[in-house]
Length: 136
Image (cartoon, rainbow, N blue to C red; front, side):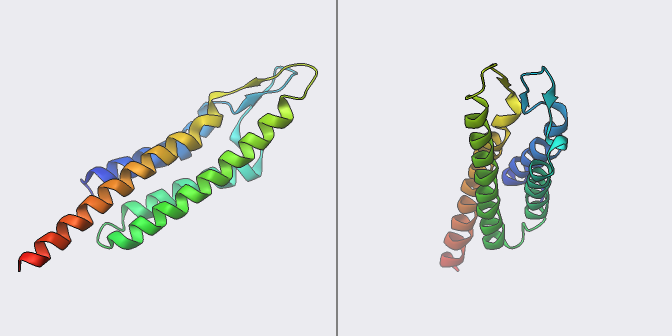
């Protein structure tokens, strides 16, 4: 069933990971140029991979265990992306001219939060199905 709450959470992850990296900047160079995810192929690939995994997980609603595992894999991918951003921000902080970090660096955190909420809802559904099966 696509109308479940975890599908809504996963749809939010798809939107956050596929549309927002093109709209919000990741950081601003000391030259004043805004850097987006499209400027670096690694970041773009990770964002597209995260969105694709979340999109595939939406349609795995009949197999909740695989959906749960796919969401955990997506969380690990988000943590890698967040690690790249932290590494980049540590490099940026050592500049003589201070550059600005953008709101786009927080997108993996938003994705992780919604993936955790989706996994909680999947677990709740799985427990409900198990409890109904015990009554039979």
